[in-house]
Image 1: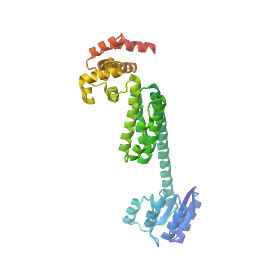
Image 2 (image 1 turned 180 degrees about the vertical axis):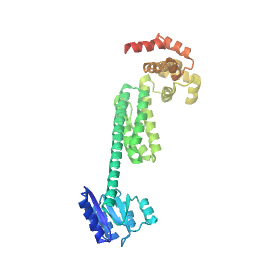
Image 3 (image 1 turned 90 degrees about the vertical axis):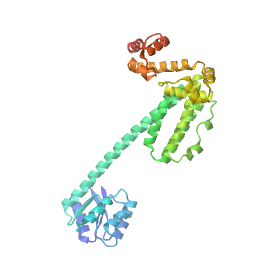
Image 4 (image 1 turned 45 degrees about the horizontal axis):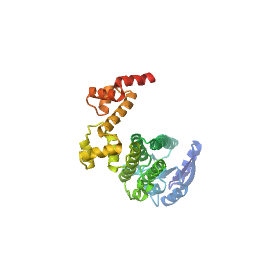
Length: 356
């Protein structure tokens, strides 16, 4: 049953509304009544009703002033105004205060019932919206949980590329679930701490202090700053995973390997990488082979073929895959693939289908 307060300086109006609600068997209980604005505001503050029906012209405080003051303490209360004065200025101000309905005197059974029914419809609509948002949030939490579990698996499997993809999805979920700075910062920090701990368990030589810092996170005073800091921590974790895959510990090489894993589909030459690293091409060539154990060209080719095989397994056409992994010349891609795998892309794709 909904709780209702009536405010009117005419005793007969207050008692009439009570009688109508009882006679119509409406799902409302009159929990308070007042005959002036000051007393009415005290009753509202005390009872915190679901609905207030108030006259506009009442002594002490007019009805609209009562609503304006009450809204600060009872933001969820719905208001209906009644008056024998139907001037536009009153109706206009009532709308700006979020008044849900306006009834001209005399208050009849039909007018009262219609006004309260419209409010109940509004509640039903609001509950539906709340339920829909709650369901969306539940699904988002489930997605966040899934991406978190996948991120942990990526760390234990040393899969840097998949880890970065899962992290991108996790950040998106966190932003949608926690739009406020303080909440986003707190939850993102917890997320980073757990992933850092998983990495430390997998790679004992990594120190937690070198990954995530509470002091640095607290310094972030905007959503953008929190995201930028979090992404830098996740990038460092990804570099450690890449290092474990290749055996390399050189910081510059780790950064270049991460760059290649994200841009393998582009035309990247060793000279371009050297420019990024601030080294000579000759020195980078030697350093790359020393750290990674293979030449740059072979590493990039192996990476592209690995990506191509995954795309072929996913059902993409050979000419599409060729461009997706950075080979604009279809025939050249087929030659490289056959040399690497001992069969053409189409033959590889056919074998995948047979296996299924």
